[in-house]
Length: 82
Image (cartoon, rainbow, N blue to C red; front, side, top):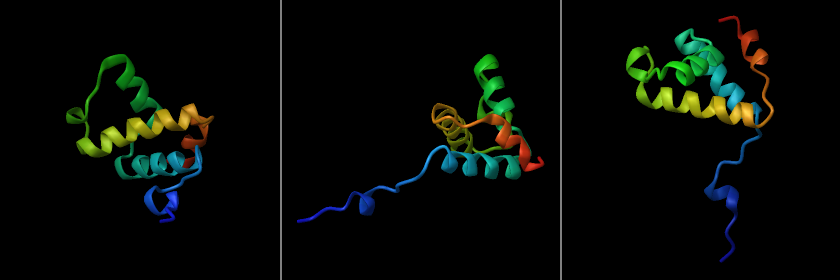
């Protein structure tokens, strides 16, 4: 049996994939990703304090971390005209 990993996993290019996810959340909730993450780090904000769902909030934080770890520049997120 020949298994192709692309049939099991979604292969994405980073940081571009996470950037697109972050821009989508920024447009949906009108909140800057970097500001959200910094506030989350410093003040322990959680999804209950935002208009975001729990799943969106967790995904948003996750994708911001992945974006940064893969060389993403937060300034690129500010070009989205929030």
